[in-house]
Image (cartoon, rainbow, N blue to C red; front, side, top):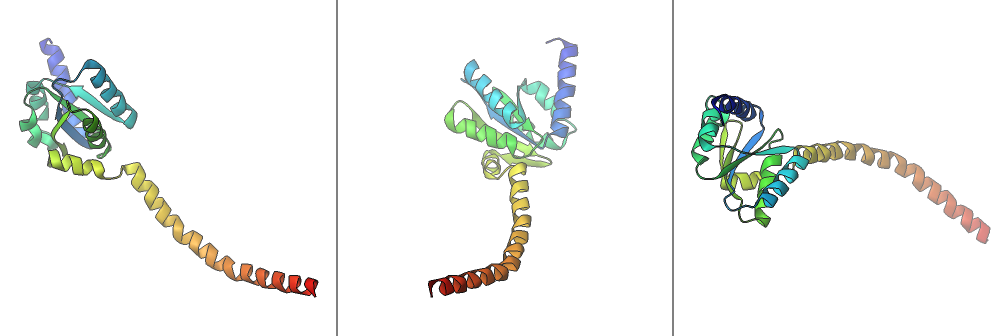
Length: 172
């Protein structure tokens, strides 16, 4: 990489660290190109991104961001996974690491919070933002359907009583 390319890459990575909901750092030593491409496509499908960066450049890009505390994680062959949704990147990385022993989660950051490997794994078990929205919407709609059921219940009970009397009269 030339000096100008490095400067541009550091600037781009700095913006990523500032804008991302979460960043996960992992080792990928020994992973094949096919495995990395599969990992990247899974992350892209979920709405995140995976980058392999030189540790020195990543540490420079971290300066002045909220995630500056993770600079110690950049040793060896590291990759950076990030997403706007705080749950997406950890979830995809941890799920992929379960099936591929070459990907080892080191830690990450979510805003100003520095996460160790266990915290990233815990974060991966949480539901995504879309799932939380769906649950919240379901909880809001449930009382309305219950109210409708309670209001409609007396009318339906009356209809059943009249129907029973009608059948009783027909039989007699």
